[in-house]
Structure formats: structure tokens, C-alpha cells
Image 1 (tube, rainbow, N blue to C red):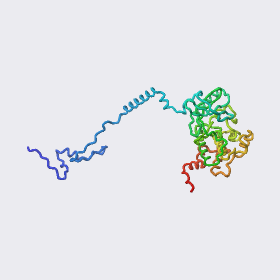
Image 2: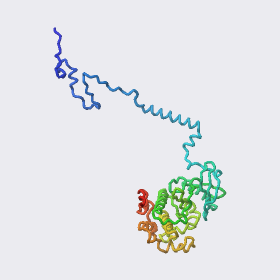
Image 3: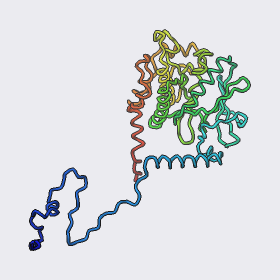
Image 4: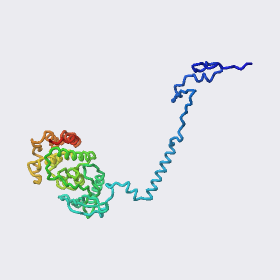
Length: 375
């Protein structure tokens, strides 16, 4: 029997026609399956094409990654345990450190009133300067426990436009509160006739009020002496917890809790609003009176703010709310009217006042480039 000879390849280099014994060539000419994720590359038999090699090391498995993270955390904890002072200095927040009363040194008195005295103090260990407010009065044990609970709540308050409360001490039957120190003092007696500056000041106060109101904290004693400023032109609300804490032990019209000159009509005379008092709206009234006083340079009512209780009550409760003078802009006059409404339900909230054109125009002014110099 003669051996079978394959026919020679054609001139165009195509594969030989399939025959009964040419199974390999028939398999190569079959169409590729569409379910393959990676198609086979087209190869030229005359060229040697290197195939890509698999990676030398694949990604670590989940168990390996977990074991590595656990070993890393254990090594970190061991290093921290070996040097506890270093770990404490890295993880501690200066505002949350416990400051013992014995480490405070009084420097000088920076303010006083019927409710207490404020001292400038320094922490000997860190050199930080604080304000220490000593609240007058001897309180019962139940009231003291309530004050302690309230101070713990106030310590959690953290907003750029609210004075930070750090600690509370009960020394010699006096409540002493350690506060953030504001080197510019209060805005009492300041006149700010420039509306752009007044709008920026109002915006900062409203942001602080909106923050407190969102946390269900009512100030109850907004007035110029409780609005502080520092050298960086930051305005912050102070004494936001004193009226709320001492309200249960003192007369609500007492100057220690709230200055009657800046109280809303319905708070002074409960018959005005059928005995209903909205404390948030009361803060807005006090804010409006303070802002109008900054603009006018005097107490906006017909009587002095240091007048007797009866004359102040008649001026606030029986006369029409004060208005901005006609020389002011329309935006500022409307802004003041939104704050000083006799009906507390018609007063705008702090969040809504932040969107008033008077506030937005000042914010836009800060974003614009400065005008070119005059030739």
C-alpha cells in the first residue's frame, strides 16, 4: 500500500481544504464562541508573538489582608502602650482637655454686672488665656445638680460664632464657668453706621443663633454686651446658657437672667400673646433691637435702656415697634421690620433671615474684587 501524500499548499498561503483526516484544520476554521470574555488574538504563523505572562504575585486574599491589618493595629497599640505620653498628645483635643481649677491664675477683671464678674485667667500648664465668669448667688443642691447637667450640654456646643464653654467649677459656693477669651471685648456702646459692616456682623450673629436654635438652645438675653468680638473680626455670642440655667431660680424679668430693655413684648406682658411665649422668636426680637441700636448709636426706643421697669414696659409693650430711620436703605429697613414684629409668629427665624437681601448683598460684596484705584 502506498503512503498518502498531502496536497501542496496553495499560493495564497490559505489552509488546505478540509478532508476526512484534517481535523485540526477544521477546528481552526470554526467560528469563535461569543461567550468568551477575552477573544483569542489573531496570529501569523510566520511570526513568533510572545504571550503575556501572568503576574508574579496576585492580590492578597481577604484573610491575608485582615491578618495584616490586625498585625499592624497590634503593633501600633504596642508602640502606643510603650509610650503613653506620645499617644495622648497625638489623640487629645485641646478644647476637650480637663483643666483643673488649681491650674488657673487670675490676671485681671474684664467685666462685671448684676449677674456676676468676668476675669481674665491663664492656664499655667499650657499658657492659654481664658475668661472665667463667676456667677453670683447661693443655690440649692438640686439647682446645682441641674446646673452641672446644663453645663455638660453647653460644653458640647461648637460653632465659630458661639463662645466656647470649656469647664464649670463649684468653688466657695459660687458657680464659675471657664469660657473662650475674646480679646476685642463686647460690642456694647459701639455705633456701626456702615450697612455693609453691619450686615457682616448680623450674618455672624444669625449663624450663631441658627446653630443654637437647631440644638434647641435658647439664649434669652441677646444684647450688645453679650456679643463679643476678637482681633480677627469674629463676632460670637456669649452667655447663651446663663439665662436658661438660672431661669428656674430667678425672676424672668430680673436683669441677671435677661435685660428687660431687649426683651420682647410678649415676654414682659404675657397677656399680649395669650400667655404663649416663643423663646426662639424672643431671641429674634432682642437681636433686632441690638442691630438697630448699633446703626443708630442709641437705644431705639423713646426711653433710655437704663430707665425704670415701668417706663421700659410701657415703651416696649404699648408703643409701636421701632423702625430704622428713613436714611437707611430699603433692604435694611425691611430687615429690621422682619425682626421687630409685635406678633411673634410673624418674625422671621434666624435661618430665614440669613437669606434676606440685606445679608446676601453683604456676602456678595465680599466675593467681588476690590474696585480699581481712582486715577
